[in-house]
Amino acid sequence: MKSPLLALPGAVPAEGADEGVAAHYGDIFREQRSLAQGAGFVDLSHRGVLTVTGDDRLSWLHLLLTQHVSALPSGQATEALVLSPNGHVEHALYLVDDGTTTWAHVEPGTQQALIGYLESMKFFYRVEVADATADFAVVHLPAGSTVSAEGTAAVRELPYGRDLFLPRAELAALTSGYGPAAGVWAYEALRIEGHRPRLGFETDHRTIPHEVDWLTTAVHLQKGCYRGQETVARVHNLGRPPRRLVFLHLDGTEEVLPPHGTEVRLASDPQGRSLGFVTSSARHHELGPVALAVVKRNVPVDAVLLAGSVPGTQDVIVPQ
Image (tube, rainbow, N blue to C red; front, side, top):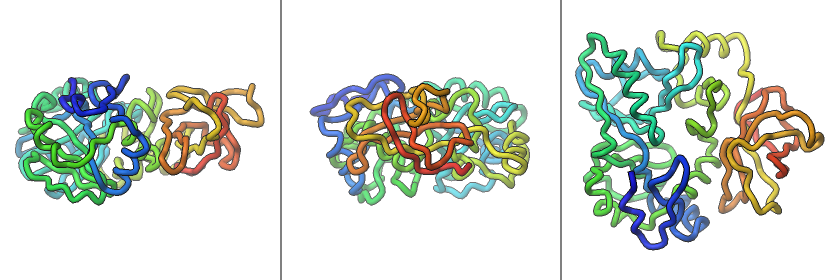
């Protein structure tokens, strides 16, 4: 779904998973600095939007998701996952309930598969699930922004900003007073700095929540049963995840960023076995080139790594 904000001056379309919105508007570092200072906004209108209504919506979602949402207060944002029976991450939802409707945004193009699963689990519960992507669009405001949320359908208040659900037909008009637009490249650089995992980037078909630090934000360890809970509980109580997410400070002398999927090895053994892969990378306005990577749990935390041909030092996100 192509955003009307691609008509703004300087807009350069994003590719791949973020196709449909702007990668940047001509100056990625200015856009990052603007967001870091609490100004501007990010067009995330390519993301999927779904709604759940009905008297049983929260108690029903509580049975299906990794998060405790049965008594979710109106207006409180949360994150949740849908796991496979073996505990692997299948979907990530970014939720808020307004008292009558639960709103969620998800990765672009994943909403139909998620809705298919939710529909299969309705049984006798009084709930209705709808794909609202055609009618509503997501826009992100950074922390510190003083922009009014007037005209929005729902708002997710977060430590790093606000996610607004806007009527898609009014997207251009409503955002015209939000300040300078920033592209998803700027948003991604700040996401990487904040160590926030993204489905399909920091995850693959084997990912369990522990590996990418989703136990911190998207999993409630004391709630009742849900699909995949046995794996979550077993690894948390009895073992450690086989892999861990790390933040990499990359060598700034290299001109090319290692793309998603780039193999990671020890710098001391560049021809050795692969220890993991780069999940996301960006040029940060203060930190320089940075990346997230998933590596084997037993990789020494003080080891210098090679992301392809680019050396990098680690910051620990998930402990060994």
